[in-house]
Image (cartoon, rainbow, N blue to C red; front, side, top):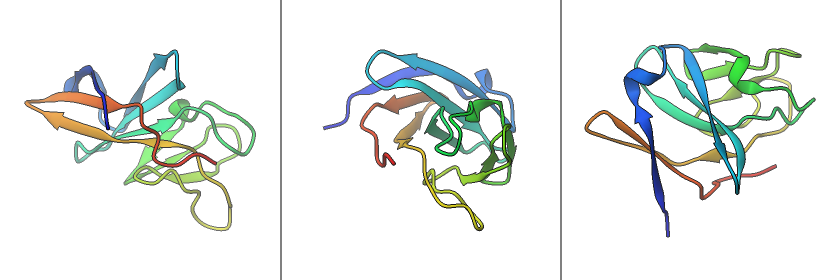
Length: 109
């Protein structure tokens, strides 16, 4: 059963940007907004070297880690290209412009 937490409005996150939500149970979660206003939530830790994914570059439906340029699919947390690995991703829902996060992790590497 999902327990949804209101984490703010879509407008609180810049397009092609992120913000970090700190949680006691799941640590830091990076919330991303694409240019088309899609919202995604990933564990804020790159599985490669532990870098803060929230500081990476959002492009299309992907994020590039700021430390070693690994690219991850925002929807799944899976590394793309030749890189192997994944970071946890979390369910998000939008209601009336409000973003809700579930701490039920979908995938953890």
